[in-house]
Amino acid sequence: MDADVIIVGAGPTGLMLAGELRTADVRPLLLERQQQLRETPRANGVGGQILELLRYRGMLADLHAAATDPHPAPRFPFGDVHLDFRNVADPPLRSVQIPQPRLEHLLEERAGRLGARIRRGHEVVRVSQDQDSVTAEVRCADGPYRVTAPYLVGCDGARSRARELAGIPFPGTTCPEVNRLSHVKLSEGARRCDNGDLDVPGLNRIRAGFTRTEHGVFGFGWLTSEVLLISTTEDENTTYEDDAPMTLAELQDSIRRVLGADLPLGEPLRLSRYQFQARQAERYREGRILLAGDAAHQFPATGVALNAGMLDAVNLAWKLAAQVHGWAPPGLLDTYHSERHAAGARTLLHTRAQAALRRGHDPAAQALREVFQELLGDEAPLRRIGAMVAGSDIRHPSPDGDQHALTGTFVPDLTLHTGQGTTSVAELMHPARPVFLDLADRPDLREIADGWAHRVDVHVAGTELRPADAVLVRPDGHIAWAAPVGASSGSLVPALRQSLFAWFGPPQNEGAPPHRPTLDPVPTTPAR
Image (cartoon, rainbow, N blue to C red; front, side, top):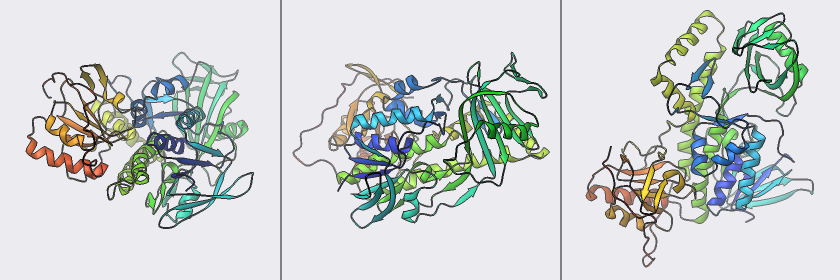
């Protein structure tokens, strides 16, 4: 075999997957058709649940250092209304403004540092599989060649060659809208008002945000005191190639059609065009070929694709590693499809709702937007929609029927007190390994977890208002099992053993040295 896993596509999803596989001692080979990193950003930021996951990997500081704005105001578009968390403590949805090329450079640097092989200018033209392996036929400047691995993951975008060659249907619809997005300097002739509005000759004042006309939607906001973010949305019959560049003249023509007047623009810093699709692959796995990111789903709204794709990668990586290393319990890899397909369907649900909110032009549609915006003035619905957009409301079903409220959710970042000092759940998750966390000094439960010490890190610590006596956390940060506070050993021990086996395979061989807790416990505080 030439690699353990072949990854097709070096966008954020493929690069995140390569890094995660290397942390699990898997040998990925990443093949990318483009010779160089794209300079034109397809996205201008990353937000949602993936930010917490990156923090749990110890990557958030590097992300902030590379960002144009590491802490933007927590205000997000939802259709033609807004989710405004500026007056909400601990908002469920956050973002970091970072152009996609910078994000990809950061992820590529991490993957390369960990030992991943990345080949640019290598295009996969054919894929075949048998019972034992997948073979990719590759074309590059030096001529064609073949590579073989036990698994192949298509992270190669909406027009995925891997998905097509695997024969996986990609049903859905393409929206008639053409969206143009730009970062441009304001030219002489237009003036910024004190409240952030734009005063344009022939148009008077344009309010910051979205302006709807009978010809489309014009939107703008300020990136800096001199640089505008401008967007237009129009219904067109034209289909554009993904790689066809947009010009400033094309943007100006679109603004003229939508607003009915010219907008004086200066130097463009970014120009991009895209069309929304609402699609989801029927299945994320076909034998030894799997899909992740845009190859698996397309959403008709901005701000969610990076989050969803990179979360796909984190969910998949440790399960593929278990298969490659030969210890995966039956059905483990299939949970990638069941969990992330359900998550993708939920993202498709709220992005289709956004499309409905923004596309209506009659008085009834405007009334719907006004009512929806009014509801978002209340904190409870605002938080609920924010968690949905972030992807933090996902709860994976438990294969053993564990009904604890924490099971299947993303583990909260508890502050942990030990005999060696204070740490946190986020720090324990940096190695991307499973964690058994004893929060109540339960030797009965640790004795069971010790049987899996070759795969699961066992920690003992106290925390304020502990939510459970113990939690078993998967490498992707989701809780596989939780012990209710004060529950007896009789019910917990067999349930813990069953969960450990279901997620992490059989226990270590008899005679292996016993595992000792890596952190000494301190007295715990009362449970919440």
